[in-house]
Length: 266
Image 1 (cartoon, rainbow, N blue to C red):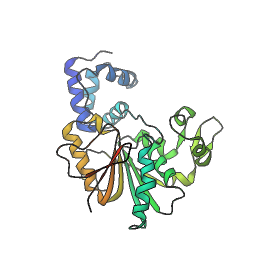
Image 2 (tube, helix red, strand yellow):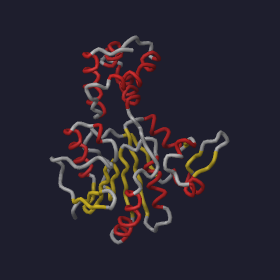
Image 3 (cartoon, rainbow, N blue to C red):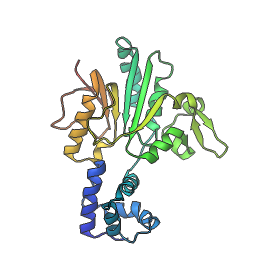
Image 4 (cartoon, rainbow, N blue to C red):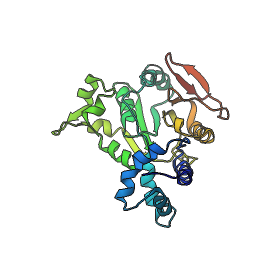
């Protein structure tokens, strides 16, 4: 499948408006690799015909499927390590003195590895916790709620001791997060471009490795929306290659050595 320059520009605008994902000028190959089979499955013949159908009255469902196919959903267990260690070693003891319930939001949670990593890290602490996990994609949320992972997925960061403690082996060789841990995470659909979010206030927010796909304007919009959802004294974790923008609302940067976390002043 080939994409004309005109159709590629049309698609870039639609994708960014719907999801915040900003494609570069030479990413046609990425669109082809992720949508060629999809276009055939839908009985369409080209990117132009797909765009025409998306723009029709019945196109909203199709658009949602297209965005789902274009979402990267790259994720690991305990990614970068330090956010989970800092959560347990510094934030939990600090919050224990001021709150009976630690509210955590995992934004852009993908297939669930990050919120389940958070839940595991909070086991054996004496603080109560509520973990909300959101994503734009219904497909990844469905997988996360079920909590079933192949061995190859678990090889990406899952410690053996936690695998044996928190997972149940299935007959087909997959592993499922046990029901106790699954019940600690509330998965919900949410588009990060749809501010204000209406999810309440949180002590800790994880929004990691998604803003790298957004334009500067949308990064600021999302970061400020997240900051509005932080309680005074709350913490915001971004990805290792992400930072606040020039127009972000002010937060205090704290070095975790390695890594950074941002704190809202009380």
